[in-house]
Length: 159
Image 1 (cartoon, rainbow, N blue to C red):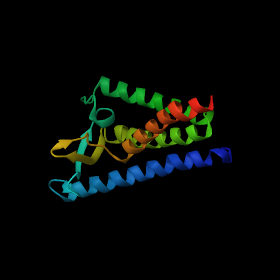
Image 2: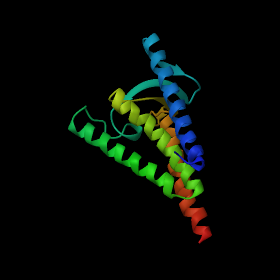
Image 3: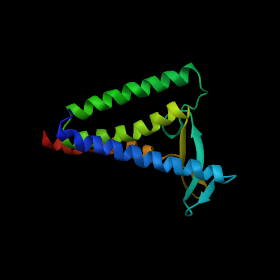
Image 4: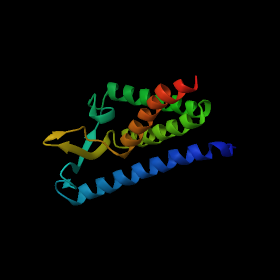
């Protein structure tokens, strides 16, 4: 039986995974009802649907092939390592690793189910666009940035 002290971490993973899945399902369903999904929410935020067969933020876009499957296996291994780190890290780090894993599992699910990850958040300024991303990417990036901050500033001050 899973110890109750890990219940919060499992809950974080599940909540992020569910929020990610719901947002992607909503955008995919919306795109099926519209001929062209290009919704301007604000002057700097658009909702569009882009299918990403690469890794984070559309990097390493490749066709479904041996390389795609190899990257997917590599991501699975990274997810297993992050899962292990949740059990072996400090309190704050456990939460940050859970955030990263929740997002990563959302994208991993899409890689397996759709053979690509649906990205739909398009940020831009004066015609310059950032990579299109999704909710899972937000939690992965936020978790990594906070881990770096923790290691550089908080943990260093404790020593």
